[in-house]
Image (tube, rainbow, N blue to C red; front, top):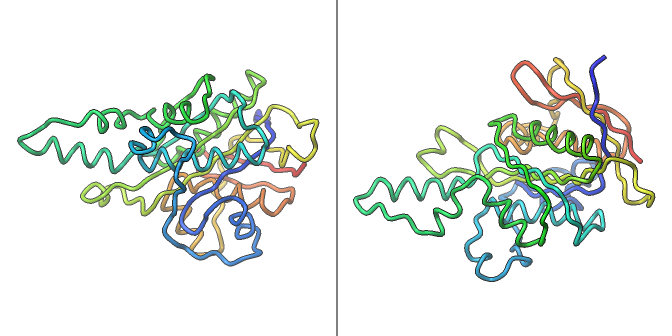
Length: 269
């Protein structure tokens, strides 16, 4: 029998093309409102000090927006939460700008650009904004990044018996790298995971159990949603969010590796 990782989702965050937060996104994914693609609008990260706010890139702002929404839904503001950050690219615009600088005769890179170039920059900004001192994992697995991040977070929840927040986000590259990695827009999903059902019944939203499968990944019947799911690695988590939004027991297969996918069984609390 394939082993299963079990956790309880207490909060969800969602920002992406046509999604301005989980509250409205839940209605769209539940079929109560039609999905209409629109350019992603990222909220200003008010929790960051002014200096850090000016330096923050889209990947930082996006991660903060989704994570803070998930934390607020779970009523866990101020908690010292372990975290998992999963990005397929990182900061595409910053990478592009540094490459432009290196292609000139004047190769001096600004300290801010260099500071934001590391893959764990968002984790640093997040810890400043939330004043969290808990451990962070920062990973990248190309198109499998959402699945890899979910597995990492679930493993921490299972082994350490503690809450953990997953933040999966992606931002686009400008040309010419866009032609090689055509991510069309910003998109991020955050999940606040707990090892057991909360004693406050309204806090736990859904139980999930994750195992491996060779079945084909879920595909949306809505063409626009399916296009989004395939275009942005972080959006590979949208089918799971749709099951959560519908508040129905069921299962969904999520993309992971070419020959291995994730079977996620969902049971509302």
